[in-house]
Length: 99
Ligand SMILES: [Zn+2]
Ligand SMILES: [Zn+2]
Image 1 (cartoon, rainbow, N blue to C red):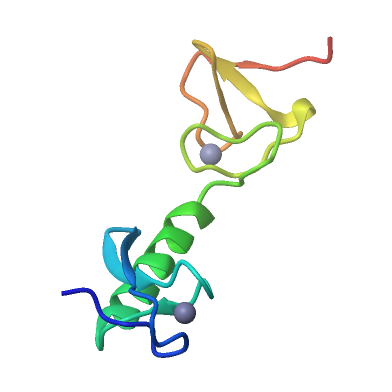
Image 2 (cartoon, protein in one colour):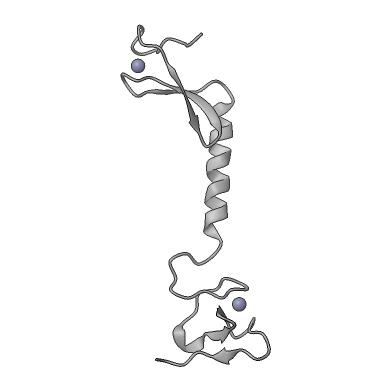
């Protein structure tokens, strides 16, 4: 049932799941073997994950809860524990002042 490794000949490939796509890997040479079409599926998932992670200003100390724009402390507005930029601030939000 398991395919032999094309590189090592006598080694059987083991199934492995990568991002919900089933691939086969060789325990000896650690080669990764994909059936036709699976590489495309894998790349697609990878791209989707990349796009999903790209949106908010990741790593920024402060980001607007609404639009996600990175904020400086001096220009952040605080409302009910969330921070907003000047454009998205809800009525009643107070400007964050330096500690
Ligand atoms: Zn191998
Ligand atoms: Zn905003």
